[in-house]
Amino acid sequence: MNKEKMVIDTLIECEALLEGHFLLSSGRHSNRYCQCAKLLQYPDKAEKVLEIVKEQVENLEVDLLVGPAMGGIIVAYELARQLKKPGIFTERKDGEMTLTRGFEIKKGQRVLITEDVVTTGKSTLEVIEVLKGLGAEVVGVCCIVDRRSEECPLKYPVYSACKLEIESFDKENCPLCKENIPYIKPGSRNIK
Image: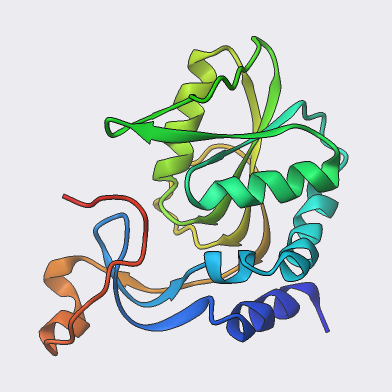
């Protein structure tokens, strides 16, 4: 069995790959959603899935792993554990991504950003701005699921356990809205 199929099978087994009508953090709508928290509740499964990412990044020169709250925290922890590096996280304070809790980043540190899912890159870009402002050097982005479309503005290498293509729609063109199917908002970011 290839590694990507194993990851997708594991996501399905953990009920992390969902079907329905979802309001995404980007404000777009979709008929599928990947809720990696459902996978990350199982340390043994998370270890196996993130081992695939570790194999892709273990030869990179990295000082620190940083994940945005919420989705990137456990990913940062588990990858940091496997790579034997420190792992910390950023979080939103008053709506702005920031480094808190006494975490420090030294100028010139080489940082790998960790995410559960990368779609639009919005959270990742917010973390990049925080890191650059502190003088860190971003060497790449790791995630369980890479859902990026061509419009994603990330200019860094992305290392993932699997790549999924999940269609999304503008609210005005959403076929699920046109069928009056109610949506749920599963993500952690407040949408205005």
